[in-house]
Every structure is written in structure tokens, then in C-alpha cells.
Length: 367
Image 1: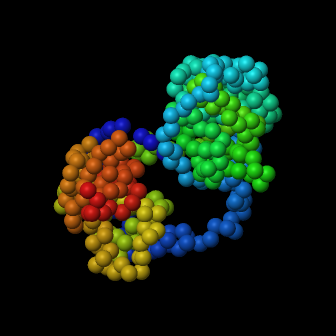
Image 2: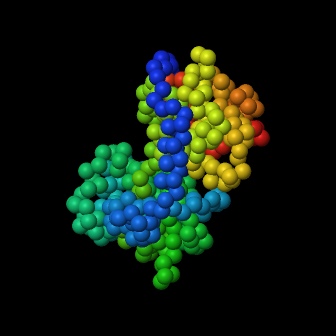
Image 3: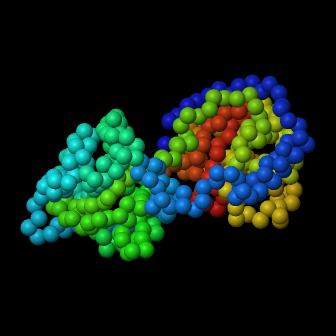
């Protein structure tokens, strides 16, 4: 579901680490290793590891469901309902642990606000279950930011979602208030679940939203690392060697070798340097590599290669002339795209240029 700016001077290129023939053998070995089955690896978890229902309290789940797209719907509270979500939960008397943490995180006014909200509210018994699994008061020991992240994973902001709508998205995920997904499922007994936690009492209405009572405390999945932070320091290694050290760029390296461009990408382009927009192996999943001869491989690589060094701060919206053809650069709130591909790892300064890692093949047809 989101990502600072650094200018580096290019270090002087010292030497090549691999010659072309050695590089091709290593790349081929990487490809063969990647094609081998991992099913026989000892300790590899089975399918249950991807099932949130199999996750014990306090263990981070793996969410493999697509996030549902929900149309905006105005929330109309029940006639005569004047209590907000905070008051409704407080009056129940079974959410003292949850509300104490809400107060500690400074979120109580959110539960009292007029903005619609959906809450998946763990009971005191659910917190006792978590205490047994990971130790007492594990959440109250978190700092305010961490605690807020855990609590907002129990809410969907700006929307009141009833159980009927939840049932309609069985097998999909909700985008929670902390921007992480939570899987919605219906179990074999017909019970509605959120990340495997059974919704024990659905549709508890308030003046500003809906609460669903759950029997487990939700633990969010691991937040994906932002690839545009913690950019490694400049290296004196060339582009080809840098890619070789990344296990997920073997397809691109093989095409570079097949195109006869390895020596070029180990060189400094007559002092100008290179900028490579590097798609990972997954970007080639729908490409029939068997039909790519040396000429086609060269064309594909050149479509991702800029003659010169070009950092993201120097990229302007509009056309960008590559070694072969032209692509469009576009900046938006969601990131920087080049030829329709999003830069997911920027400004990797190497000895003979810059690498920008992209999530797809560049296309000259995307405006």
C-alpha cells in the first residue's frame, strides 16, 4: 500500500571485478539456482503459514489477499443513537484494556469524533489471551508511535462497514487505518473473521460508526520496507557487478550478456557514465525470453539505458531520450514513474553511473 533526497558525487571507477565470460557463467548459475525447487528445503513452512487463522496471538501474519475497493457510502446512525464509539465501548465494561491503551496513545478523541469509523474491538479476555502468549502488558510497554500503529490496525478510517458488507468481500482484505491490510474471511462454520479473529458480536452501532467485537487482539503484518530510504553509499563497482550481487536481477544480467553489452556496462561510456533503469526478475514473468535473440536483447536493454548519469532530482516531467527510443517521466503523489514503471529503489550510485530499480519493464507507449 507508500517513501528523501540525496545528491552524491560519482566516485572514481577503480577496476573491473569480473570479465564478461566469468560474469555470464555466474549469471547462468544464478538463473539455474532460482529455477530449482524450494519445496524440499528443511523447515519451509506449509500453506498454513500464509493463513492468518493459523497465526497465534502476537505473531505477525502474512496477508496474501488483494485489498478490496469499497465505494464511499454515507453513514446514517440508528435513530436515537447518541453515544459515540468511545461511550458505547466504555458502557459495555468489557473493553477496559482497549480503552486504557487508546487513552495512552492519545486516540480517545478519534473514537469520539464525528468522522465515521469502523472498529474491530478486542475484549479484555482477548488481551488476557495475548498476555499469556507474549507476556503481560506487552502493548502498554510500546512507545506512543508503536502503540498507535497497533491500535489503528483495529480500525478502518472514514467508513462505517457493517457485517453484510464484510461478508461480501470474503477472501479480500481491508486497508486499515495504519495503511496495512487485514484479511476478511468466513470460516467453515459461517463465522466472519478478520485475520482469523472471529467477530463474536457484529454491528454494534454508535453515532459515529460501527464496532465489531473480536476475541483476539490483531497484530499487523510486517510493514514493507521503503526501498527509497537507507540508500547505500556510493560504490566503486560497475553496474554489471552491482547487479550481480543482487539475486533478483539475473534475468536482466543474462539479457545484458546476450546483447553483448556487459563490457559496455563495466566501462564508463567515455567518461559520461550510464544510468540504468533496472527491472527485477519478476518484471519479466510474462516475457517469452526464448524468442529474444541478441538483437532483441540489445534493444530491450537499450530501452532501459540512458547515456549519462541522471539522478531522480534531475529528472523532469516529460520525455526522456534513452539509448534507444523515448519514455515519459511522470511525478505524482504515488511516486516517480519512467515509461510507466515506478522507481522503487532510486539513485544507487556506482562506479560508472547510477542504477534506479523499477517495478516493471519501461514502455515507450505510456504517457
